[in-house]
Length: 290
Ligand code: NAP
Figure 1 (cartoon, helix red, strand yellow):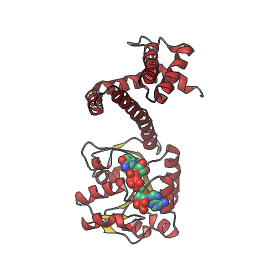
Figure 2 (cartoon, helix red, strand yellow):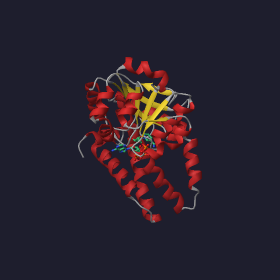
Figure 3 (cartoon, protein in one colour):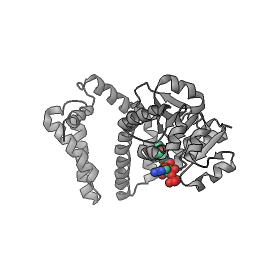
Figure 4 (tube, protein in one colour):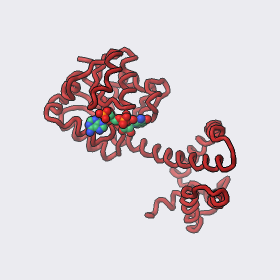
């Protein structure tokens, strides 16, 4: 028996397996495209001949493939299912909370334990002391394997028993990142149009990360408590500033999709009477069906 099996050796799975091997763990690996295992085998991992052999090789099976549907396709062969009983499956593919719940039920149905995880890191950060991976599911199962799992991320954070928690929080973070990535790209268009270094723009955002983080904490508190009154800056002020991005895009001749979308949402919130509230009151528009 090895200590841990890693199934899926794409960008992320290879990083997970590499961190385990570097930490001196006894690791079995399997990937649909076997050639991706070559470097890991040279470094000391064992390559299983089949998924069933990979599952049978270790008490803990970490799976990181494209999505939960791929996880199911990999694990549902009859020989694999037979090998699952008594094992713990740690799912590190990205999915939705409902997929996590369905997968937990299916894995338990095969007589195995289950931890659902969500990786808040790039592959190059795997194995780092500050790297975060979220986990949810049965606490006793998580604690039994916690020491092994922290090899992958020093900050392997247990969120609670409802198995959808990790996927839910990951989805919420991804939603934030989606807006942020589009925002950075549009900001870069503005910089390019005005001859400003985009790298220095990125660096400036990095320098502002403390202030931007405080805005996130503040918005979270306000939305949870519903206290939108007494704002330092009103939704109306923010909305009018964002409306000027549409004007600026027209003047510079650059794409205006993001400014138009954002200005439209803020305009709806102002028209609905929320202009004198905190900008977090935008959620009142989003809560109603579009
Ligand atoms: P990737 O490089 O595209 O690798 C995908 C992996 O899934 C490969 O091992 C691939 O096998 C396997 N796979 C896909 N469909 C399969 C199937 N039907 N049967 C068997 N194997 C299948 O993707 P990745 O970057 O490693 O991402 C893997 C997961 O980690 C995703 O859910 C992703 O959201 C999550 N994640 C990634 C990052 C990141 O920065 N990369 C960050 C956070 C979370 P083959 O090699 O044979 O194609």
